[in-house]
Every structure is written in structure tokens, then in C-alpha cells.
Amino acid sequence: MAQLSSSEVLLADPPRSTLFVSFCLARKVRAPIEFCPVVERAGLLRCIAAGAAFFVSATLHVWVGRALRYALLRPEPLLRWAALLPVVVIAALLYEKLFRGVLYDALGKRLPLGFAAPAVAVLAAFAPAVLRLQLIPQPRVSVAILFAQGYLVEVLLGLALAWVALGTGSTVPGGLALAALWLLRLGLTVSFRGGVLPFLEVVAALLTPMVVALVLKRELAPHWDALMEA
Image (cartoon, rainbow, N blue to C red; front, side, top):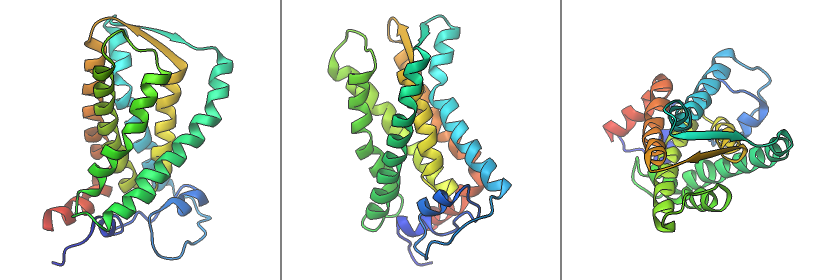
């Protein structure tokens, strides 16, 4: 069997259903973009399930920490949430389109099969890791430790977002799920002591790609098969 590039694997069996016309514009299909007036229920449910799986798994440490009384949660005023909503959503959609869309396609043409998604996750994790230090209250420990922990979390979440994009054929579901995650991060102050909550965040981030892959098992199967046969 001829070896496929990473970008070609993404096109191997693109999902036929889309959510909105914007989903058609975001799909990584090299054929001419067609207008998609019909919203298929299966595609809608798949996108919702993938985004929900990412969000729930990525924020699991917050709820577990609260249940175990390792963390205190204090929501920000409603006006702050309203002000954050459009900014975070637009930024997350553009971020996903840039990294999981444009950069993934570019690297997929140059790197061996299977290397594009991890490479994008590694490169895309720098910006959110820095933003965490600037925008989210941090404990009084070494900045290097905080950055390393945050960077590891963002790399793992980036892999999960790659599976979302592959399984849904669009960067939009991942962008909306990422926006929900950052809305929670910026709109909910989490106070904690010790290293339990940061450790739980790493565990939650480690589980997130697995959870997303399980939810999108059928949609990702052609990509795994092509990778194994390469």
C-alpha cells in the first residue's frame, strides 16, 4: 500500500455531515468548497459529543478537587462572563483554525505520517502556557515549575483537540470546546493549597485525548488504520 502523508490521511475518509456553512469552510478538504444547506443530525451529535467530552475531561480536576475539598471555587461577576464571551470564542476559533488547520496542513506535507498532530500540539502549547501565567492566579512557586506544568497540560489538550478536528472534519467544534474551557478558567477563580490540584490537572489532561478518541472511535478508525499500515 502506498504511504500517505499526514494531510492525506486527514482526507482519507472525511465525515460527510457538517453543522453549518462555516463548518464547510473549516473542513480540511482540498476539493472546491460546496454550500451545505442540510444539517445532518448524526454530524451535529458527533460534534457536540466530541466537544463535550473534551470540556468535561479537561475540567475534571476542578470538580474532583472541589469534591475532595482541595479547592475553593468563586465565580466572577456575570458582567465579566458577558465581556469575556465574544473575545474568548473568537480567539479560540482563530487559534484552532491557525494551528489545527493551517499549520497542521503545512506540517502534514513535510513530516512523516503521524508526526503532524504531536508537532502542532508542541508548538501550539507555548501561547496558552504563557497566558496561564499572566491571566490566571498562580500559587507562590517557581515560575519555571508553573510553566512546565502548564505547558505539559496544554500539549496533552492539544493532542485531544487534534483528535476532535480529525474526527469531526472541522476545527470549529474544538474551537468552541476550547473557548468553553478558557471561559471557565477566566470566569471561575480556583483557590487551592499544595500540589494536589495541579497534579489532578495533569491527570485530567492526560485522560482527555483518550476520552476524545473513545468518543470518536468510529470516525478516527480510518486514520488509525492508515497509520498502522504505513
